[in-house]
Image (cartoon, rainbow, N blue to C red; front, side, top):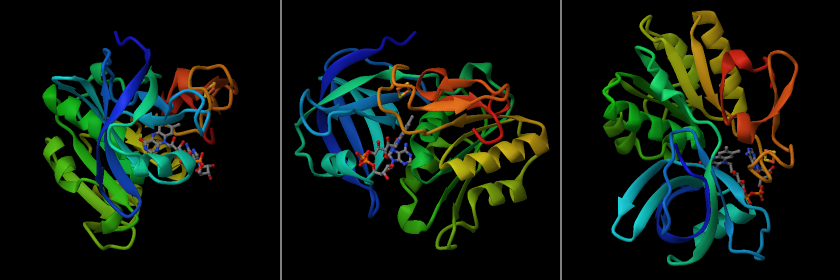
Length: 263
Ligand SMILES: Cc1cc2nc3c(=O)[nH]c(=O)nc-3n(C[C@H](O)[C@H](O)[C@H](O)COP(=O)(O)OP(=O)(O)OC[C@H]3O[C@@H](n4cnc5c(N)ncnc54)[C@H](O)[C@@H]3O)c2cc1C
Ligand code: FES
């Protein structure tokens, strides 16, 4: 059972991955464990700008002699992600986590297929590493707009114990086309569950494919979040039965069958 902590962390490393994305390692002096699909809320130390922490999926957790290292993959889109790209190594940040419900890896379906789109890669990469460690066979489909936006292709290949299929919208690397179209084309009857994270239109397409193939899909949603702990209700999503739940607490990973068709 993971214990949530609110702790100061140190920006330990940063690696540029693409024109818009980079990888970070955060050094946590206190204990922190996480499962794939869980997220953290990260911000500057108290009182600094921006005031609200931002949600990021955990891409991996490792040990170092000085504490736990949390790995993130980040796309620069606005105020805080720009700050993260420029912040000096060694700076202090404030982390709350791990938060939310991750992928149900222990339910161990016979053969899952993993799908990532763009900056949806972090929880999928974490899930791939965990499934490989548990000896559960799976294939992985990863799509991005172009070869420049495909993050860590070697790392993704290494983490996958089955087929790793790369797709780009412009055909500059791997299969040409949207990742969901390529998955539909290369679908194997043995796939028993889809685990996915990416932009909402991609997740709608994954949910549709899962319905057609009569398998369950686990979708990691990225609804904008302000508090991350169920207080502000800014992240609610609509369920199949018409009720609403905060994505930060009931998710961010949901079974597609639980969700409304357009959540
Ligand atoms: C559970 C969860 C996990 C996430 N994991 C990652 C991750 O691993 N890596 C990563 O780079 N990003 C991730 N995000 C998105 C990330 O939280 C936002 O990109 C970030 O909050 C933007 O902060 P900012 O201050 O840079 O941008 P802001 O200045 O706050 O916003 C810039 C622009 O981005 C838009 N925006 C903000 N949040 C989102 C969002 N969730 N979806 C779509 N548009 C948004 C705003 O509307 C605005 O147009 C995740 C979001 C959630 C909810
Ligand atoms: S982000 Fe505040 S309730 Fe979910």
